[in-house]
View 1 (tube, one colour):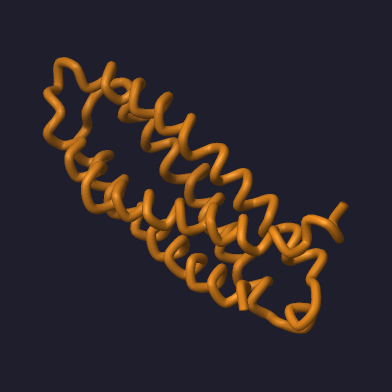
View 2 (tube, helix red, strand yellow; view 1 turned 90 degrees about the vertical axis):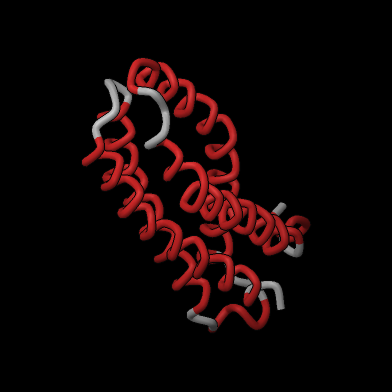
Length: 146
């Protein structure tokens, strides 16, 4: 089956990765900064809705991206067999996932009980790690299309 899907995997990988690049820049520049403007009285409800709705959009793309990244790293084809680019892409993906589940998800959990300016500022600041890593992953994904 990998033989049949092989040519599509880099394209699917690039599509999922660039979807996440666009999304993370939107989140970093627009969405997270605006969290500070949500009225305190409805922040917990807003935060819960944000997490639920965002997960529905982000999770499928992240899983497609991760699956394609693993296939490209573990089963390289053609000229990519000797390329370190696939390992750079995998390393960046690990950084994104570690940051997501050890930093951003816990910060969102803290915000789900109510607005805390220090937690919010930390969320905006630490999200730059994911923004940079996903942007670099986008470049890697394009390099893997050649």
